[in-house]
Structures are given as structure tokens and as C-alpha cells.
Image (tube, one colour):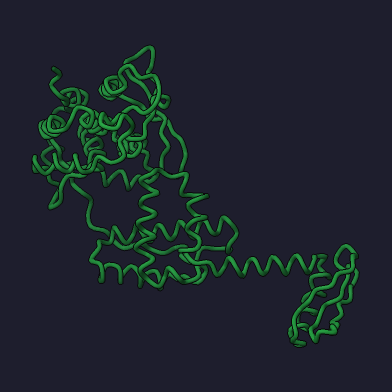
Length: 369
């Protein structure tokens, strides 16, 4: 049976009160508790209970103050720590997205609400207000909501609170998938419209389905060319900060060797104007797309759509969705399903004879001088 230790409330000569007690190790301690006698009595009862459980009252009180402090932290205040422990593990494009999401969220009162008090209804009101006031799409709102959910998850991991208040929150229903149908001729026209260095980037994206930031930040030491075949493999940091190996086909290997040239280290795709990696190619890519009038529905073809092209072409050849899921690095099979576009006409032709995707990809490229 635990030894009962007495905690006494003592009035000091300054008119305030202090608790005199022996801690769980038997050492004498004194703690000032203010000028309110009722508060001092409540603390006395609490201290005796902690001592009965074999805990140090001063330490437990300090922990409680810290818990109260962190539970009152807002999204805006938590963001620097979030980027330090989580954001730095993400790609540069994802870090820019986090910054963009925070900028939009800070325009609403939810950014000044303690994170532990953010409720599902409050988040849902933000989503509806964002669409109504700013005219954004459900997809944009879902990205910002996912950003808040990730921040809350990180806060839980850091013991700021026990459970995320947004756990189980359903995102808004988004519009249908983008049906990206890019022909071999259209792809060849796009490559011919770009500078050689940018064309290498786009061709590599079509041949591998790799995300833009992974391509632009690709370094030579991440690549391994096979000795017994003309293929290779590449090590990439995927979403979540983990590294995984992805296979390379012949055409992708040819693009890499052409881009690397005589270099032995550094980035693969070098901007000839700066002598270092590309930071953003959106302006040049969009200019070429608009000149060629390459559309996906009512919008222009985006660089990310090249992942859809890669997936669709392989799917049209008969490659299974399970393999496509691995090649695209998707955790969820339903995500891969959104990347494929298969028309009834194409499906009928596949039943007769499957085209060879490698022959199609091999025909894509610039006319070398």
C-alpha cells in the first residue's frame, strides 16, 4: 500500500499561499500557488492524489501546463514545426502546395481556432465557404482539407492531443476523371515544338509516367543501367518520403543517356540557360500546348496528364491494372483506375490485336540532326 503523504497549505508573509509537501521520493518541496485559498485547496487535494499514485506533483503540473499550451495552438502557429518534421520530407512541389494551402486557409477564421477544437462541421463550413466565396472546385477544397488533416495527424504523433478531431471526415465528391487521349502524332508534335532539353523531359515523362518534380530533381546517382540488357532502374522518393525502385524501359534509358551525355554527377536534366536543374517548366510547356491546341475536355493539357498518357497507352496494350498501380506508385487501386482512358472502339481493336506500346513510344522523338 502506497504511503500517504500530507500536503499542507501555508500562508506566506506576502499574503499568498504555498503548498508544503514531500514528493514521491520523500524530498521536501514547496510550491507557490497564488493568493486564492480555494484554488490552493483544490491543488492540495490533487497533489495528495498524485502522491498516492507515486507521481511527482510538480512534474505532473508542468506536464499539464504544457498540454494545455499545445492544445491551444492554431494551424498558423503549428505550421513551422509541421514543415520542419514533415514538410521537409516531401518534394519541393508538395512543399509549395502546403504553403499555398496555408495561405488560403489563413483568410478564414479556422486558422485562428485551436487545432484541438476544429470540428468536422467547422471544416465542412470552411469547404463550402471556400467554394462559394472564391469559386474553387471541390478538388481544390479537398486538397486543402487533406492538408489540415495531415497537420492534425502530425500533431497527434507529437502528442499534442490523443486523436485527430477530423478523423473520418469525408471529402467532397469531385468531378469525373480526366479522359486524356493523346495520340502518338500529337505527342511527336509536342516534342518537336519544345527545345531539345525540355523535349527530353516530356519524352521521359511519357515513357515512364514519373511525376514532374521527381524528373526535374533526378540525379545521376539515382540511376542504374543494367549490364545484361538495355534497360535500367531508378530510385525515387515518392509521396510520404519513402524511397522506391522503378523499372526503366529501353526508350527511357535512351532519353537518360542522351540527357546525361558526358556528365558523371549532378542533375540529369540541365537548363542550358542556368547550367543547373530546371525549377519550373510550366510556362514553356503551356505555350507549346496552346499553340498545338492540345485539350483535355475544356482545359489545356497539363504536364501531369502525361502520367495519364503513360497509363492509358500501357492499358491499351493489355497491361493489367495491378502492374500499372506499381509503375505509377499508387497505394490505392482506385487511383490507378482514374488514370486510364479506354474507349469502346479501342477495346474492340484490342480484342483483335494488341498493339505494341514500345513500338509506339519508340516512334516518339525529335528528328535528330
